[in-house]
Length: 346
Image 1 (cartoon, rainbow, N blue to C red):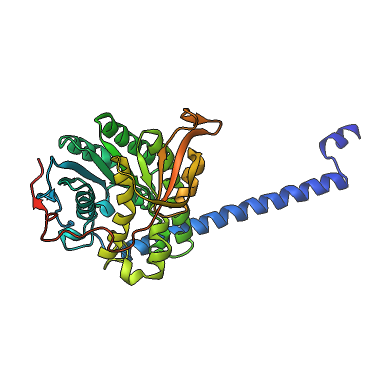
Image 2 (cartoon, rainbow, N blue to C red):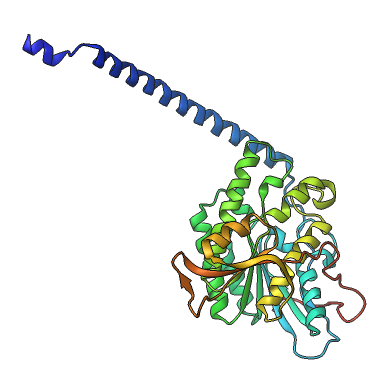
């Protein structure tokens, strides 16, 4: 009896345990099946989105050149790095590209010429920043504007890898004495061909990457501007107006909104203050990054509190919500002093 009892225990307690184990196994199998089904659905949606979003057919207009040549003084050199949003894919006129808009705005506000070099590449992911930075350094840049991250989401680049390459780019440029402004990952949840639930995941991934970019860039000595919300509600409300023909990239008006969000921070990085609105303040860097990811046009930069760079929660950061200039606030190149003189790349 003792042997039999030790081999096959019986009773209500053992029966309940077996039922729990059986239900757990069923639950685990159901969860795994649901995960497989969801993964298959997401992959199908991703394939459908790629079929719906046309491939790049032509490069963006060249915008390299000298802007504001009639202004006095030596030119300030600006480089634009990153992906198709930085390059201005989808517009047909030089003056509609983000680089031209920013160079024109800088030239007019600083009353000096600006030499622009664009090295951004359509389809670039963060690991592709290194050759762009190497080319940019040959121009002796004063300020660099980087917009990157969207393709890292669509290509599922591991976030840690994407951030590492971005940090390497920022540190290299800062080491050469160049100020760096990064437009963080836009909200891909606003892209119309992407349907729920993939749209919800795309928004979550975008905001997470944008927050991680903010922390890393500020730690490396750069400035950030959140683009996520900027390319969210307004683009969702006016998709025909704000998106280009492919329904994926911004239209000329959408790029003007993007440049208007970036310009105040570029001016700040160069030592020229601009007005901000209530809501700014000092936060720990992780807190500032999370808050910036949720609000368009929010600038984050390093600061000190009582002479110290860091507090109990990490590096101190200055959070500024810039007064939004709106469409048309960034000057278009015209026939006057800000007309660009086109040049080839060195």
